[in-house]
Image (cartoon, rainbow, N blue to C red; front, side, top):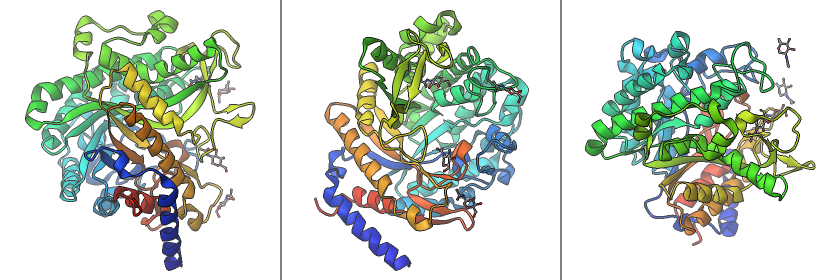
Length: 498
Ligand SMILES: *[C@@H]1O[C@H](CO)[C@@H](O)[C@H](O)[C@H]1NC(C)=O
Ligand SMILES: *[C@@H]1O[C@H](CO)[C@@H](O)[C@H](O)[C@H]1NC(C)=O
Ligand SMILES: *[C@@H]1O[C@H](CO)[C@@H](O)[C@H](O)[C@H]1NC(C)=O
Ligand SMILES: *[C@@H]1O[C@H](CO)[C@@H](O)[C@H](O)[C@H]1NC(C)=O
């Protein structure tokens, strides 16, 4: 059976490279090619080595929250299998690996307790083994997770105290790992963090108000902006520390990773073109405008006015150009439907720009559906997004920090159906082609990371959504390469038929 499977793989990989039309030579020689993961989605070992509880440990244990009733207690058991997983990366031929450090593993009680030497030791071993295999660590400091104690003590992102606490954590990471880590990002997808945590209330700390959601506490019109403000200033605090104390000596760079949707106007009218522009400003500009230009986007100011917190002049000074690169996570396009001039079914949605993001128009999806109901296969959106970021931010260096295809396996697909993932191969091929077009048009993109190395805990969807290049059998923790892993390996080798 396995032999037959290998044979099929070989045949299909050959076939794909023949029709591909995209290969390694379309990208600069020093380009980073990698895979991406995050702490909570793969590590497991949630109490091992003196780790403290993170907000996601607590949240995922709340009954009824995760679709398949699962949690990240064990996940991919990467905490115990990291060497094996790095060996997989090495066999793919990647030269970099994007992962996140668990704040609660390094500081189980945040700033209110000791530094956990066992936590440091885990990341030291991980980083050393990556470097031994010729793989550059590309590290995220906060991928949605915080020590639960910060939530319990003072309300985490709603309290400006977190700026100092995040700086304290970041400083420890720069000091302990910065001689070996040359790429730092402060946050992963802060728009998702604050929108899901404080507007929709579907991620911790589950705060929201109607009509956005039905939580016991929160205010969807106000709190996302307070949380975002503290995230932005926490970013600036960490960057300030890095630049003053470490950067010259260690020679690395620091940035932030944002989520990006490409918004197509629902209809080709000035009003809906404006709606699409607003939606991008509310998703991307919300964080990048302050971090690069020192103030919130004009598109947000117009709609929100005094709801937006203000930056003091010393904040502004600290903020300006407080990054070396922009990390871009990109998966899908959506239609942007205006709710400012026309009626939308739930009201004006002022707090997210008065725009509805829709996957369908007249019942037709914007692109082929994926296993995630809100993500579609829309490769041209990649080029458009990268060019948008290039133009809005004067071609600051970019890394494409996430892109990948989720397969919904809750309807009991056979392992074979999961392993021969031709749709994922086609997805990666078409998005990489689109990315190479953006580079040809002048975008300074320096790397690309597939989400994800291995199937893992997909937040609210648990283990039923599979994004991995490697299949994981969660009963045995066995990893098996999918067709896409073979394809990526072949692509990185330069292909067979150039
Ligand atoms: C919100 O939840 C409460 C308690 O579960 C319920 O009684 C109420 O109908 C819900 N409201 C909406 C709009 O869903
Ligand atoms: C704004 O929020 C509403 C309610 O959650 C949602 O339906 C809509 O798609 C959001 N708009 C965008 C652009 O995400
Ligand atoms: C996956 O499929 C199941 C049933 O087939 C569906 O209920 C669920 O919403 C899907 N998940 C996503 C994230 O679209
Ligand atoms: C998938 O399999 C499980 C266990 O065999 C079963 O409980 C579930 O109903 C199946 N789901 C579907 C959508 O067929």
